[in-house]
Length: 159
Figure 1: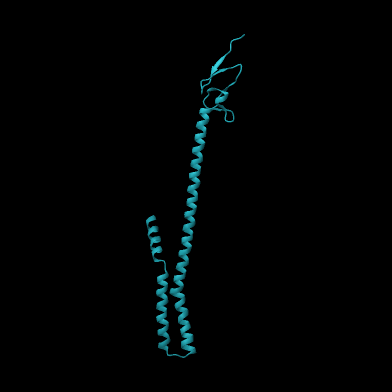
Figure 2: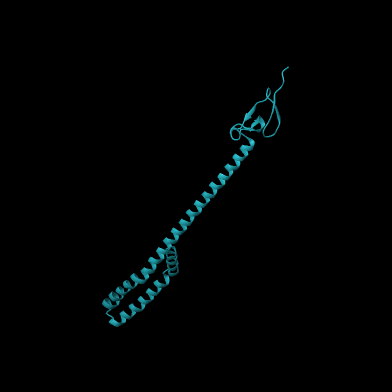
């Protein structure tokens, strides 16, 4: 009977009789390993495969962090856009109360009180001016002064 040739696994150091069992070579590090210590799909020993899995795990973590960062940036952009739209609406409403409403009310007073009811000129002008001042003050109260100041300061800081 011939001599049995035996080699030892590079990972677990188990003796392998070559006539009964195959040895495999890792494509990553070049170790000769037994069947139990070889990952056939990756063609790597389990030491190299563990490193490969750790690298894959780290890559997934980095991808997840990047995805999370992008989602947060998108949410911040959406919030900023909603805030910008709300400020534009507040400015528009305030300007309507400061400009349009006093003009329309003055025309109304002139038409109804001055022309139709033929009240004295000073009477309807006084009513119109007092109410116009109230409308302008109401518009000034509605105007988003603080937000405009913050926006202007932040724009000047960027420059």
